[in-house]
Image (tube, rainbow, N blue to C red):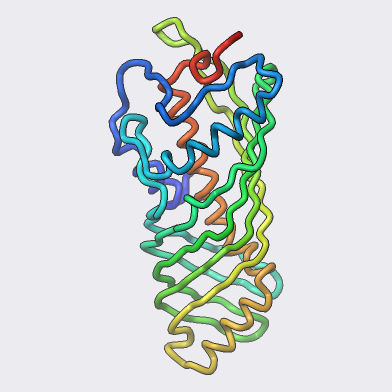
Length: 252
């Protein structure tokens, strides 16, 4: 069953009506031939050129603006030994995706598996939070504005696909499995109005969260990573559902 985050993102993309016929690739996405001996280099080169254009959205391919990315709600329920939190982030704006750097690609068309590596200098999530839980023996409660910033984050997006023949007789890529691995360089947290506005306790708590960011990000970072993964998957599916495989990767 999808989370509220998943439901929102899928709903936002679904607002854009699907064309009823096959499409060419957007003019800002250049193709790479299947037999290109430097296929991966071609994918990275053309991908780097496309990101600045694609990030602004493209209604023809049912892709909305991605920076800022608006998310209705992120929920965290899990906990671990030192930090157990229940938290909701609402009316979030995620910024920084436009600065993504395409680092590498591994394209295995024969086995229908592709991997893309990206570097994100910074991703910031600003919104309203409501939190309750416990750090060691200290109860935590708060409700107010928040800022979560992830810096120097590496991501590896991996996906498998099948080829499906449609009524027009052409084969299209159908994404069957995706995953996103992340390596975050540093995370920063700021929650205003903790402990009903007690400034001393609030500052102490924010300092604790930042001093122990690696543990905290295991809880708070997961929803953000999930949102990025879903963005990758939905964008990819939108294009591959509309553009034939041999147009995306022309044969020799």
